[in-house]
Image 1 (cartoon, each protein chain N blue to C red):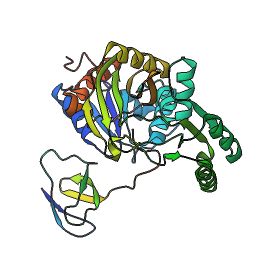
Image 2: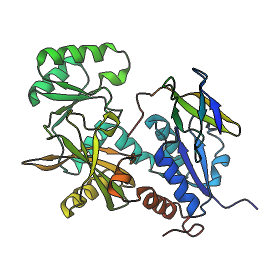
Image 3: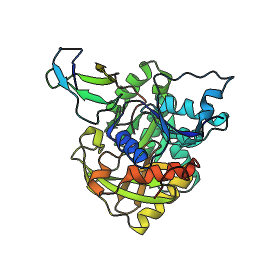
Image 4: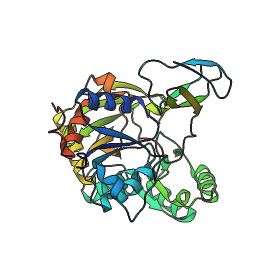
Length: 55
Length: 293
């Protein structure tokens, strides 16, 4: 499966087992991207980290 | 006839932990649904759509979203793992410290103040250096080690000026020289199942900030204090962070209600996701319909 980086248009290959809502890093521009769909694959800029995130 | 209740998993980003959890559920043939916390909305008069869930497992990245979802579901009698009360206690450092103090458990000296003047007084009572933390937050964000009065005045003034009311809740702890490591212990129910040293040359030893993990043996003493800490906050699935003090022994630092274990699982070799799934299915009353070890 392949999609394009919404920031720099690089072609990104999604590995087997990729899940919706998973975060990927564009190998070209280093943007954090969220997988928003798998069929067909789609990527969007990942949400910014918020103050109450994490454990 | 309506379908049998299933497990819901509330999530934000799908991290490696969620992928392990989904895999473990699928390996058992468990019926579950993924619930994206950015897409849910609640009609407070109509719990109907949520009745499909025997329980909802909270894996949201956001403390606020997880807490509100838990409160709403619990108010309708739908259990969450962890419960709203546990999330509320663990997600707010003031509440965690208060629960630990009430249980008589060892922790760092901690003060809470609500104005710059009172915070300065509390800091000088403890003595420099101290650590200032936001009551809500993680991954080592916005922690400040304060070495002297000049730094204290500057940082407190900055925080008071930031605007959000939470920045004027000053949570102050003595600084502990932790010899380059702290410990995270994963507790499932009443069992401490895995321990991880988090090592860093920096005083913040969070793996989100580059600390390196190493397996930490769960000694009877460590298991005992972690079980007590878990009970003090209401129990469930927890990640307990501790310091080792040369004279005072283990000191509990934080308790995480939706713990990450991306480092602990591979480093310790314990299949934490698998153990959590067993616990959650048992708690949700779904163990019969899935293959629980």
